[in-house]
Image (cartoon, rainbow, N blue to C red; front, side):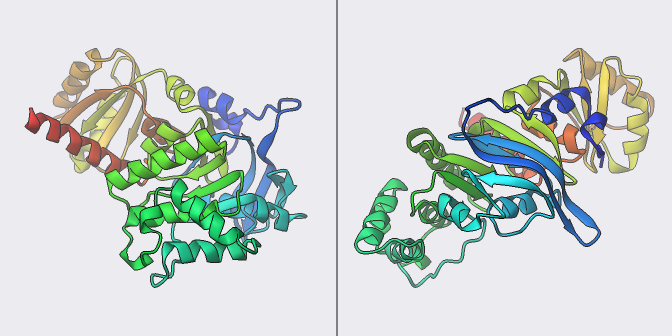
Length: 358
């Protein structure tokens, strides 16, 4: 995996993005992070990151497993203390005022512990009381939140009868029960079918748009980040390696993406042969395919196939596309995000279904 030790080692387009930490005088920020570090023994899980998230922003936080994504999120939600650096969440220092931070944020974890014998209403009333609501407020807030996430009709059903999508919507309701203005969502759609995933996306987008809630979203689905987030940060080996809007990050690649499926045993020979390809900017590889960042568009296809034919490498498939967040992630970290393969399979399945229908 390619790894940059500092922003000075990054390709210039990502170095510009990762260096963006410009404060606007008088601007209100939901999250302010400076020099944040977390060390476990000899392992530096978070290596001095800087980050700001504006109030009302939908912010995506991406990274491969072990990159520091979950550690950073746990620090910001006061579940871990940082080794060094500072962070303010909802205006409060996470170390000196953790109680105020917890009262100001909502957190929906990937795996929420739900009592399957309780009803949706009972679970939300309990959460409201744990957040300090008293008198008739817990029942009022529970009813309002059930209506907000479209679960009023299922309010008095036991959670054991809820689908995965319904449980995730209840998680959202629980995170919002005390009226926070900042919501942390940890991979909210992992494991859901495509229809349920899109329903959650619509709900989160609506909460941000209509309720003005700031959302800090970690996800393994690049389509999710591309569709929802105004800006995304990519963390790798504890450092922010790319930061900007999805459109900015994709445009800064300034290349077409040529993907070639070649036999695993021929990978090294193929890579060597393709170094002679006109307009080649970079090659990335995994066990199944080569990803080429090229200029010249469709003209590069014939040249690439010819070069591989000259060294007796069989090409299984060829695909030319414009940059997506998947390629941004690949170029910034040297690997693809875990959810990218499943996401691509679903996209290909939809395309096949449309062709068959026509």
